[in-house]
Image (cartoon, rainbow, N blue to C red; front, side, top):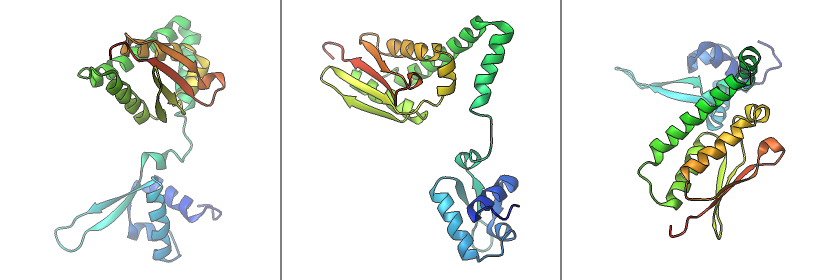
Length: 211
């Protein structure tokens, strides 16, 4: 392993290769003190890169193992961001734009079905807005909701599929269609898009009369 790697980088590489390591196994790669290594492991755990597992034994005290979280695996080179877009571009080249549109429409229908399953028992407009924002936030959209005089603003500070949405504007149009179907008695407006160079996507939802 490259000596220029920091202790934390070395720990990440060890766990990437071995998947799950005991402290004894981890220390076999180091010539610094166990206290120092444990300090770095604890910091990686606090930062969400490493997970500590408790292993119980029939005899004696439990011991701990360490493994990478999804965030930890994401520190290594991958094609998660580029590959979906490249596949859509390949699909367009082979089968044309209509094939891409069909795939993106299928994604929209799946998103709509998921929302419907989560919102089917919610009648209150305010509660529904809150739940939609919660679902989007869990998907990585970094959502904030602001109540306005006429309804709500939903602001997304991150777009997990911005690379695809930038290449295929249908993604944003589909998202607006989903919002329209989720709030059929409201006026839904897209005020800004990250794909158009704004810092966030902003949706305004007008509260239905009598709600």
